[in-house]
Length: 281
Image 1 (cartoon, helix red, strand yellow):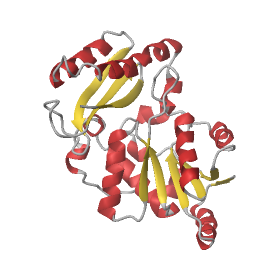
Image 2: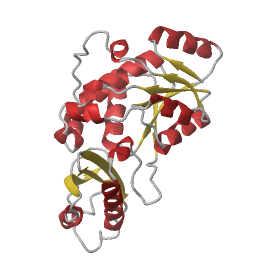
Image 3: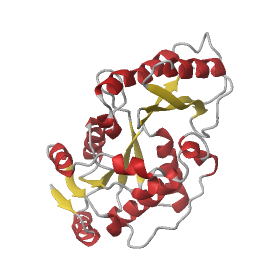
């Protein structure tokens, strides 16, 4: 497994792999890896011949400078974690390698970026589109693998690929959870013991909510989730919405003919946690 920092070196290696007829798989990450990331790498190993993992904390997708500074970084730990996996190359560039000049592109994702994460983190999805499109241009993968924990981000990336007509297949991968149900996230390591113990209420509440659709209407269930979580002194709900999987607009009625997804963001101390769950009719 190689660790490459420069675009030219990466392109030379990947050019040779393509000449061999290999299918290139790509897992973009911001490091601080965990088993959720590893599941993406292993899926890439099953579906492609040569797997590239990028580790790059992208500054343009943080609307909060403090959040950028707090984001955990440990390259050696990440390398050690990837060593026994299907990963064959790590791309770990500096910011000026990705952005030799400021990226001033502005993407328009319509209503997809005006709700939930887009509403509470203005500019976030534009930064995501900037870095992912840049990485796709550099790596030129055949398939790229993303976790469904970032459910709205996955929709944004699919829309970006469609708009830019990029020749890459986006492969969604299931949420990986800790043994107690908390969705795996690099941010989990920022939680102190009390916060970590109480953060499990998020996934537990979402799971319980899926069993209440026959007794509560959509708005009643939404209020129930928010109130239950906010009663915990460690947690404060930023949003909880039950939305149409395709339009991301709020669902008004359980009989609406669409797949419904409950999406949540919760502040736990200074750490922001997100999760989602499918509601089945």
